[in-house]
Image (tube, rainbow, N blue to C red):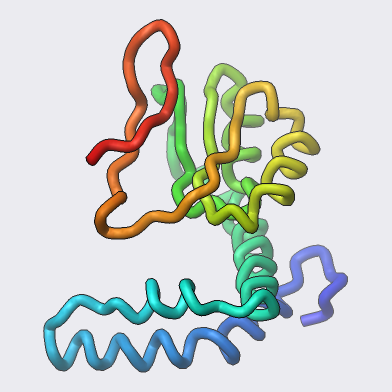
Length: 158
């Protein structure tokens, strides 16, 4: 739990204590009523900067631990372009792009993640094959795709 340990889960624990009880409580209502849960969207929309830092650090910690399993458990070799939706600081995309040097990619995450994601992509030496897309996914904007053509880019559908 030491915050400076190489694989610390300090912020993950804080995330579980400070943020998750509210979200898990709304899951009960979803199961009980059968209605879609909007609690997560509401919660993330109202998240304070302090709670956002805890959440973002928690995601960095857990992502760092699972990267080897993701790379070992999935063959990305047939993919030429990849978008990591909700990719936060770009850790996972950086690792995938380093493992697959012909692939290009993008991180779609909240604008607050832009600076850290761009730094991560640069530090991983994949910024020439990657980009950060600031935005958020909602039910009305949940379909992203790769457009075909000479200037292939990611664009939103719908």
